[in-house]
Every structure is written in structure tokens, then in C-alpha cells.
Image (spheres, rainbow, N blue to C red):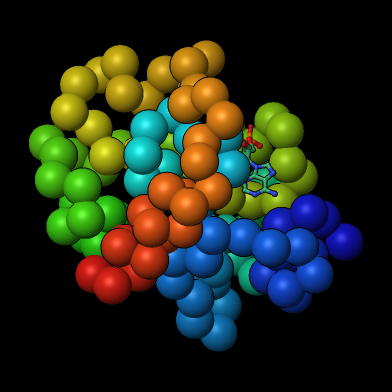
Length: 129
Ligand code: AMP
């Protein structure tokens, strides 16, 4: 079971943003910017391009809805979307509100984000979903 499957199952806590029967969205615990959200399929697949075409399409559409909620919560130029997957072997999309290119620099994380603020951010995005 991956760490993200444990989060989806509720065995590990997360700052949940949105969920449906197939997908789950929650804040990245080491955000590069406030509002940095991960969107994952509940199906446990490591490499995103190993998802079947239908699931990949549905994942993207779910991420689109989450991105719209992020944009309302954090007014920005665009919500950036990235796929890395080098750390956690469970497919996921990173969504980050962007005002400039530097806002999506994965080498620069917010240090020790305050748990109360993370909860506030997750609830704010969730309220716009
Ligand atoms: P990558 O697999 O390279 O896309 O990176 C995995 C991402 O998952 C990183 O940005 C981590 O900060 C994030 N991450 C790892 N564990 C957790 C967790 N328990 N809750 C939220 N985000 C996590």
C-alpha cells in the first residue's frame, strides 16, 4: 500500500481538498506555494502514463475542477500543473497557483508550514470546489 493509498483510506491524516469515488485531492505537505495541491487516482498505479486512457482523462478533468477551486481561493495568473512522481510511487498531479514562473520551483519549499494555516488553506479551496 502506498503512502497515498493510506491517506485515501484515512490511515494517515491529510489536508483534504476534494474527493469523489475515483480521485482524491489534498495539500502537498511540503508546498512550493500556498495552495499546492496533489490530485491522485484512488487506483494504485505508480506511473501516471500507465493509467488507462479513460482514467487518465477523468483524472485530468477532476484536476481541472480542483484547479478552478484553487484559482478562486488564491487569485493567480494560472494554476500550473506538473507531474514528477520520482518520490512517491502512486500517480499524482501537482497543482500550484502561479503569479510567476518561480512559484513552481520544486527546489524551494515553504519551510515548516503552520498546520493551522494548512488546514485553513485546504478548507478554503474545498469551499470553492
Ligand atoms: P513526487 O513523487 O516527486 O511528485 O513528489 C511527491 C510529493 O508528495 C512531494 O511534493 C511531497 O512533499 C509530497 N508528499 C509526500 N508525502 C506526503 C504526505 N504524507 N502528504 C502530503 N504530501 C506528501
